Length: 110
Length: 121
Image 1 (cartoon, rainbow over the protein chains, first blue to last red):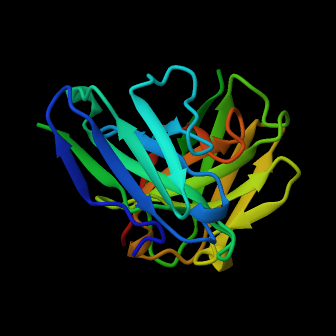
Image 2: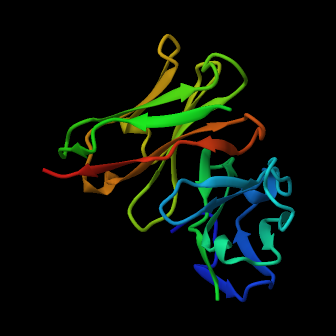
């Protein structure tokens, strides 16, 4: 049982938009920055979004992040088959004194 | 561009100590306000943070693993290491080393490719 809650899976057609939610509490998302990671099949995770909504250099603006209260959302527009991957949210939990991740969401581009 | 590479035994016997090393290339482990991290992923499951060592030498561990974990840095070899004692089958996972704070103060910017460790007799 993960501290951060993500839907197990989402799907959408190529070219469409999808959002992935990440729900937490005041001890984690509510008071700390959220980051998002993309894990393509058989590869290591890759930083996609940091500080709730910032993109590292090289990450297309099709990927966006937002945070409201104790929830965060990853948005992906113009879906491509190459976006099929597992997506994880993560943040520091001040009560647990521990970095926590969501359980991951598998994105399928139909 | 800093790169990370994990190394260590792929098979560890139950009750023994798992030891992994992460070699840093393209940069010095002594520079920057970074935190040198270990994260693992059991087969078919999600990510679990193990802990990190801050540039100052301070260590922070996952409370659920704290009694068994040691993370250390060897600046002479530009490496940092993980030791996990008294392993069981539940410790079977892909182990990743990662750096936090390179571009994002509160995220894991750079990851190694990961190394699979199986705990079995």
